[in-house]
Length: 237
Image 1 (cartoon, rainbow, N blue to C red):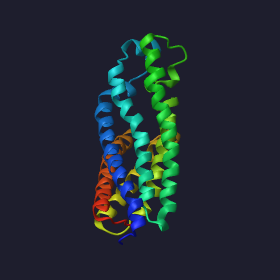
Image 2 (image 1 turned 180 degrees about the vertical axis):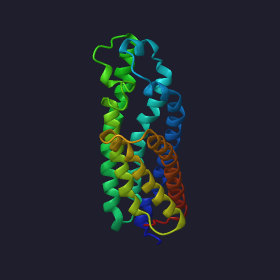
Image 3 (image 1 turned 120 degrees about the vertical axis):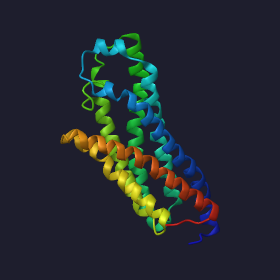
């Protein structure tokens, strides 16, 4: 449906900013995955001691996957906010709920990753590690403080994606965006559930692969939708 001039003025900046936020979300997710895979053995290796971990700690590989995670949180929030501004009025209840849940995710995990980049890295490098164990990802991951915060944060962002899915209507591209949002939302809930009810390791590995694919594909498709909407001055519900 062609929108009014007022609707065009409202949706044009939302589509422009949303396009870049969605694109950067996909890039940051790929960056995280490529940097995280080499560090995976450290997280799942049997815990030896705090002294041994501090002695082998390397800041650069650690920051390589923490930094994109830190920026991913506000970027997803910006993407959802633009989606809310872009959405037609009758479906803005769903998009507003998506923003609300994304706010909780961004607040929790940006703080978590900032602590890792500053407090944790500083004390591991300087050797002042008293009482640090529970704040380390490598300490019986994911049963530690950052692992628990991630579970809660990712649970909220998954609900955010599920709330956002109904705003997309008819049309092949919108249907693809909707189902990638639903796929990410459902597959992402496996992580917080697995901390409460242990799941088979094979299922967790398959789920991680699905999450990486969907959190790359979903924002790329959304960026394409924003771009088409901006070019045609169309707001599609």
